[in-house]
Amino acid sequence: MTILDGKKLSEEIKQEIAQEVKEIASKGERVPHLAAVLVGNDGASLTYVGSKVRSCEKIGFQSTLIHLPEDTTQDELLEKIKELNNDEGLDGFIVQLPLPKHIDEQTVLEAVSPKKDVDGFHPENFGRMALGMESFIPATPFGIIEMLKRYNIETSGKHAVVIGRSNIVGRPISILLSNKGQPGDCTVTLTHSRTKNLKEITKTADIIVSALGVPNFVTADMVKEGVVVIDVGITRVPDENAKRGYVITGDVNFDEVSKKASFITPVPGGVGPMTIAMLLKNTLLARHRNMKNS
Ligand code: NAD
Image 1 (cartoon, protein in one colour):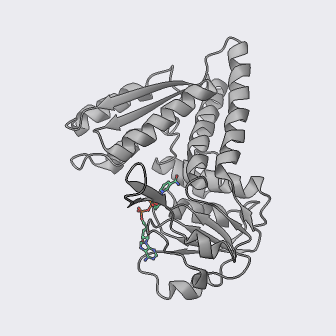
Image 2 (image 1 turned 135 degrees about the vertical axis):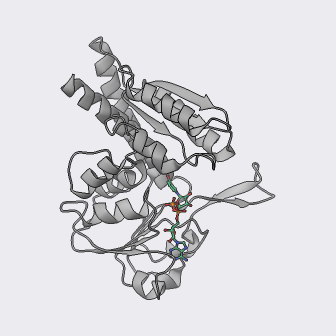
């Protein structure tokens, strides 16, 4: 069994990006610039945005954090997005989700210019991704694909079972795994909360991508010997003995499933760190595409 070490891999990717940034800077050109918009004070969102900004700084990107108050109106947020769309010194930006309840997420995501949409959430990017065209691929599925690629995991003709159909993980990874090429060429089954006999389906899987957010949901009796397991789930489970009062838990019961798996991601240290690395990669791609078109 091989542990898919997302922490190590993400460090390698970040080093490669940092090297490119050095070269850009040494030519006297502007380095990639990523902005993050955060509305309100949600604890997990503050942590995520903070670590995105810190990662930018570490690899030499310029970064800007735009922290707006909880009572920001939708119109005010849309005005800010318009400003960022038109800012020529900015390559890409993200709007951290979830947004406060009084703001319609879809309206906001559609307001982001597809050229700066480094999260890959705009319908134009999603459609282009589905058609195998140049786009921004959402960071989490992009990270999973990169992980399969760098660990040389054969995917052609394999049965991949995805658990969860969210727009940011389950649905896009199911499309990417079914696309032509390596990694890809899988026969994909996309399962969700209404799926019947899930266990019968997962038992036939060569590759399982679990993105539902239920701790330890995937157990040993649900998988076959030699399966490749990608655990996307991140749930904070209360734990009095932990320093922060909780532990981060994945969707997969790692202890038992790892005994049957050929490859498996740990949580934490698997898909999570890859997600940030691929957001940075998307920002670098945005920089290159901007340069090409300017
Ligand atoms: P979501 O929370 O929007 O939706 C959950 C999905 O799981 C739904 O499609 C639902 O149909 C499915 N589901 C729920 N119960 C099910 C069941 N019993 N059987 C089969 N399917 C079931 O999904 P999300 O936003 O993709 O998040 C999923 C998990 O991944 C969460 O824990 C989230 O924190 C985590 N996540 C991690 C990263 C990362 O970087 N590692 C990125 C995004 C999300």
